Structures are given as C-alpha cells and as structure tokens.
Amino acid sequence: MDSVFFHIDVNSAFLSWTALDRMTQGDPVDLREIPSIIGGDMEKRHGVVLAKSIPAKKYDIRTGEPIVNAFRKCPRLTMASPDHKLYRRYSHMLMEYLAGICPDIEQVSIDECYMDYTPIAQNYPSPLECARMIRENVRERFGFTVNVGISDRKVLAKMASDFKKPDMTHTLFVSEIKEKLWPLPISALFMCGHSSVEALRKLEILTVGDLAKADPAIIEMHLKSHGKLLWEYANGIDSSAVFSEPSKCKGIGNSITLPKDAVTVAQAKEVLLKLSESVGKRLRAENVRALMISVEIKYSDFQTISHQTTLQTATDSDTMIYQTACRLFEECWNHNPVRLLGIRTSKLSESCEPVQLSIFDLQSASQTERQTRLDNAIDSIRKRFGSDAVVRGSLLKKSDDLNTR
Image (cartoon, rainbow, N blue to C red; front, side, top):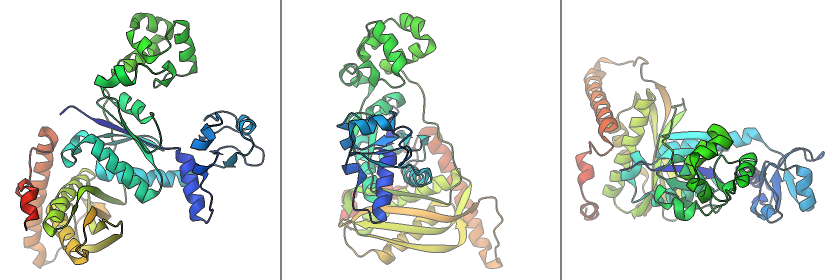
C-alpha cells in the first residue's frame, strides 16, 4: 500500500495540561470552558499569549499577541502562568503511549508528532478507525484531546490536523487538495507566514489554489527558495518520510482498543499475540530485554485492571512475552467483555549484559538462543518485505472459528 501518515496534535496543549493539573489539585473551574489564556506574568501582565481556550477565541484573542491586548479584548479573561516541567511530563506520557501503537514516531514539538501508519495498517480496519481509537484512548487515559490529520504526504497530514478542532480527525490526501485545500486563504498554508502572505497578495495570490496554479518561477523570483517550497506544499508535493529516533526508556509497551469486544480466551490470545510481537520487536530494536511483564485489561464498562510478574531471566522473545501475557490474562480476567488489551515490559537491561545461569538453565538457554535467532530473522524479513511477510499460523485462523471455541 502507499504510505499513510498521521499528524497528531494536542488541542490547546499548554492550556489543557494546566487545566488538568489545577483540577487534580481541587480547582472546580476547567480553564478550557471559560475565556482563558496561558502566558506572561500574572501580576505584571507582560509577555505574550502562549495558548488560549476555545471561548477566548470568540474575543479574537490570538496566540502570540501581547497579553495586554488580550485583556483589552476580554477584561474578564483568566490567565495562568506556564509550567514547562508539567508540560514535558504530559508530553512524555503521550509520546510513550503513541510509540506503543507504532514505533515510527517523529516528535516535532512538545505537543505534536508524525506517525507512519503504514507498518501497522494490517492491525486496523482503516486509518480513520485507528485515528478514532487514538483520540478516544488519549481522552480516556489522559483527560485531554488531540486532532489527527491523515494523508499520503506528511505536510498535508499536518495541515489536515489544523482543520476544525477540537478532538477531530480530518483527511487531506493528494486527491482531495483541490476540494479541501485550494479554496482556503493563503494564510492557511503551512509555513506561509505574515510576510509571505503580504508578498503573495501583491501578486494577487489570495488562496492556496491561486498559488498552486501560479508559475513557480515567478513565485521563486519573489520569495526565493521559500516561495518554491510554498508552491510545492500548495500542490501537495512532499517526499519526506517519518524520521524516528529510538530513545532509551524505562519501559516498552503496546495496547489496542478492540473494534469489537473480546468475549473468549481465544479472541483475547489472538490480540495478545499481535501485541507480544510488537513489543518484542521494539525491545530488540532498542537492544534491551525486560525482566517484568504486565498485562492491562479494560472492560466494556471502562473498569481497568492490570497484573504483572517478574521473570527469572530478562527476555526480548515474542514467545516468552506471549506465553507470560496469556498466563497473566487468564489469572485476572473476570470473563466480562474486554474493550482494550495492553502489554507492558519494564525493568529493562542491555541485551549485551551477561546472564547468570545455573547448570539447570543450560538447556533453556540453548532454546532461548534459537528463539532469539528466529525472532531476529523474522524481524529482518518483515523489515524487507513488509509486516505481513511472516504471519504465525495461529493468526491465520478466522475470527469466526475463534468464536466457536
């Protein structure tokens, strides 16, 4: 399939995260529901607006404008100071969750990232369904909302996520730009700032479509290389890929909200196998092994339970993770319909660290080594030929067969 990219952007990140923090400390007022801003000094009222609530937009308050101007527009405006340590903590939680869905994440700011949906496409009915699941899980887990833009070009995914907010999914594929992008004012184009807008207006270019149809040589003559870039973006030209850089972390996990509740052990184990393969692959990519494995279950009534165990020897084996996860699931499942399943590993160590074995562990160690070679071979095949190049036999069984067990 052609590449599909997500752009995931937190709605009014600083304001949302500040609002959540204040409410956890007993504040009954949700800053997101009243005219409010983040920025500057509360007493001196200097600085600029860093974030604004949706009610504040009704007063034409804009991000980046002086706080004094914002208070002139709305004297009853509520302002809170930024807490960047708090924002980094929320950002880390979000990115860790998203990396559990797909390791191909490119974080471009504290509150936004790109995701390459292509490698995980077989796990979801459609990109729209995956985006819906992400938005619902973020809202349920963390209490704030995100917009998700979907496209076959990174830059178009970015612009799609800026469409109507909050908590929305929008598509902007190359085939849709004439309908969805070209009618917009030129100021809506990504990377088209105030000076570029003014220069283009002098050329009678008022919409994105005007720019897309213009002679690129003329645009470049007036705006140099930046003009060429804007012209390419207006035409949906962007060959960039998601650049993900592995980072050392304290735990690696993955979870998925099921399109249909699992009601049998067999159905749950099918999902746990996919999750185990995803987590094992990420452990091997990070060159780490896990000593602790935990399973999370969220039921259809949104009640959540988790169960964990410590292994005798750290592992990065899909099989070991799967077998342990199945045992944990069977120990704590109460037979109610399951809405979400997750596997998380922790107590990580470098793969190259020596392992203390007794004489009774030698046969097990030999089996583990064979399993490691097999997992690495499967990783290599999938990397070259795609995620579906190697599929375990148990995953080939139809869900209808599973329902009869």
